[in-house]
Length: 216
Image (cartoon, rainbow, N blue to C red; front, top):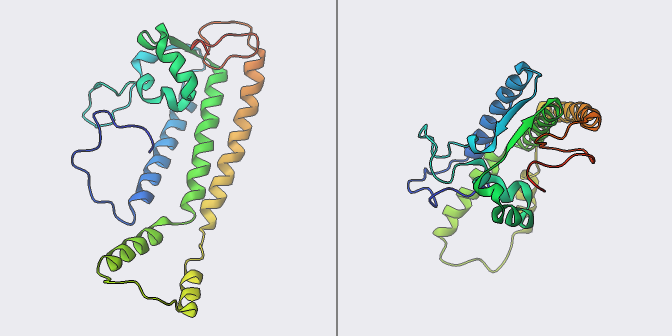
């Protein structure tokens, strides 16, 4: 949600509702399930993955437009500002390298999807729709208030704060914990596999004896 939009802000944004954020998170959770299913059915054989071929269809027009390449979009987010600046000045930015995606990378990426799903389920356990609706109602009320009162009704304020005490959905918390356990399981497999690697071919996540294909 923090990624910059190519071409600037959305020229025709839709009005967000109280349940918009929850719907976005649920959609992402569903997409992550699809990603894990794809990873689970993928061939275990290593393959070459040119970074220049990876892009995100941000404007959902079915075609790759300027600014939608994964290197352009995620460089600073994934590498950090200093590393991203060094990367941008190198030949790797104009000619993105190919990554050799192997079994260790497969385990790492699967673990990453579980990590994100755990965070999202934990967030959804505390439904944001009610809070978003309360904020919208408060903004509307404040817009019509000629002046603020000079006193506070402490009893009413205490009642309001008590009503805002978060009520969580236990099933979401349990789902989040289950995803984090899977993250740990896949990460342990990743650590064992990457440590055992003896090649040094276009490594995405290298061990101490290997070099990163990104030059980092």
